[in-house]
Length: 599
Image 1: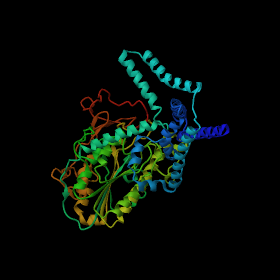
Image 2: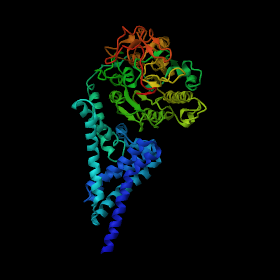
Image 3: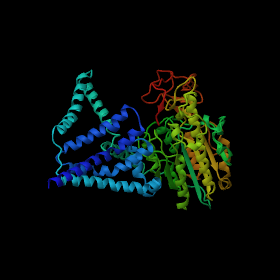
């Protein structure tokens, strides 16, 4: 009897320790790929302590702990697989993308790993249930000084830390309480990336972000342009809008860059470069709505009360798609997604943060082919690329590592700035390939078809006189964007006047605010408030002042450019209007860091 009890207890302890190890597996994988003391704390120390505290709290019923942790044991292999693939834990944004992914896309994404992962899930949940059963049958209990010390330390440490912060923070009681609140937020932030307890905060953040995004989208459900087709076309029509990311015109061979960054597009027939376009905003959160809607150039509000081009296209009889290699929610993504969900079909392909390796933009091509194959309707499709967003070496496969050495090569014989330029040019080279392949798919679709490409904003790269890098800084390279129009022979035969007008205006001073009305004319639609004077496909188009926004509003064509750093400066800063909450007291902005990774 005693021997059997000892044997049961042995198996119970093995089960408990195995479950503990399984739950720590995603953290261990993350730690393996990372480095630094902060990672040690977030990946190992905090999750291990929290697990020990949880077991200690229910020390009289370890079997109950096993049952409560069983769902997390089930998900642990998936989290570990994700971390092994992308080298960072899931987040609220990733959870949104995974939930929005349909079963077919999941099967295609996992590929040959699907069956092994399914077996791991089965083994994981069985392990948790067996640990619970063995613990219950062996009457395992955690008592004694070890449990008491863990609970005491777990409770006392945050309380003492907060009390010390409250006592030592300078200022009145309100300032001290704010310091204590900030400390609590800092402590909580250490929990979020860890597994399994960080999942609670990630899910809560996902639910809040998702609800807010859908609430903003619902505001526009009732909006109508009353759009319609201008004239019938007796052939299927397919139109594609491709939105690039962080692509600066200065590094495109199509626009005079000496490096061969556009070898494929340079050989494409019927491609019309739009050679002098600027965006009014140097960040995606404002630049993309400027492409998709008629929001005024100087309006920074994210609550513009008019629907996007997708609504107009749907009203005009086009089946609409939004296929994105970016994320569904987030501070910089949700304001775009509220327009994306005006499409009838929405797909999110990227399962990684923009700050980590993820899906390459070539992954957009499969869903594009599927849309053309599975639907016989006229189509309007938006492809949203990851493009050239930091980090540059994450954005292209090894086969496109043409310009060397790159930033990730860590070749100290070449200055870091030069290696960054090489990495960035490789992203343009890869974008060139993806766009050429997209055009090739459309070319062979037996449809009247056309494609419009433009980047949301450009990018600043380091120079010998300026160590600014990224976007959101207000330099001319962030406002000067690449754009082009491609059309099929069938399109040219059906709409020769549109092609002629577009070619006529392609070299003029244009801006991203022209895009909405241009797309309406490109597809042959119209509605009562359509303004052809903004459309590059119309003979009525005329140029406007190209206002750009950073720390202030400037007329791009009359502004001065900084000598060391090419910041766009109003010709008369003292009288130039500023954005709400921004100051015009300085003649040049002074970022506190040399790197800006804002979206």
